[in-house]
Length: 79
Image (cartoon, rainbow, N blue to C red; front, side):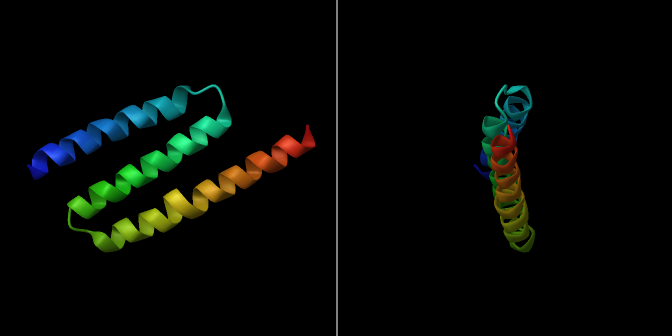
């Protein structure tokens, strides 16, 4: 059962990654990038690395995405 969850999470992670690449709007890509980070968190936790999962959640899904969204807002104000 765990193997099925890992495989489906990995396939979902690949699909979301490609979707983030092909998006036309940058905001949609950033949101999908957050999904990639959260998918990585799930995989790290399933591979019994909760410390790495917590770090990935804070850095990738949290801080990096927040910085990207702030930069996008700043660029939108300059137009």
